[in-house]
Length: 169
Image 1 (spheres, rainbow, N blue to C red):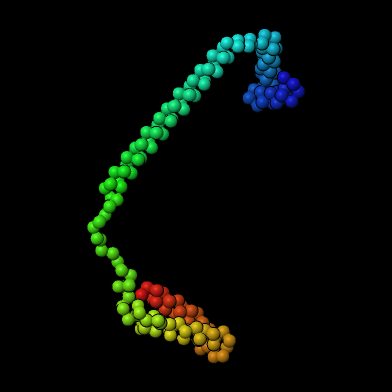
Image 2 (cartoon, rainbow, N blue to C red):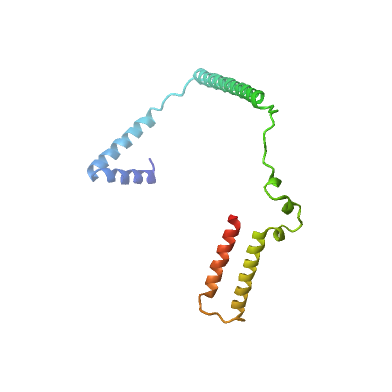
């Protein structure tokens, strides 16, 4: 162990033990390091390394083969399911009634060039919105003296209510 590692070990041991026990533990650790350095572990033989590598390659090959077989089985099952669904629901020759959007709106309004003018509700709401907008513009430019200070707020609330009612139908 070199300088910084030795200091770090000393600080760490002092957190868990008193000073004398920390010094004794550090001495034991250093003695164990000296013994390990004096007697290094023997390197494995080249035959052992070759055997381990071949076993790892064989295991990886088996795993890849299993994954390949599993993917092929899943693909085949998906193809069968899709074929069954296509055969069962693919050809629907039964005439199902559909909603014709044009049938919701009256024919006179549908064929008209000005839908707003032909629908009485739209005409009423549009005129109310324009009237309120004019009143708000007059109040903002001070052309008309307001009766009280809440007139602008009342007009805005009325405009919002009319627009909400318009979109609800």
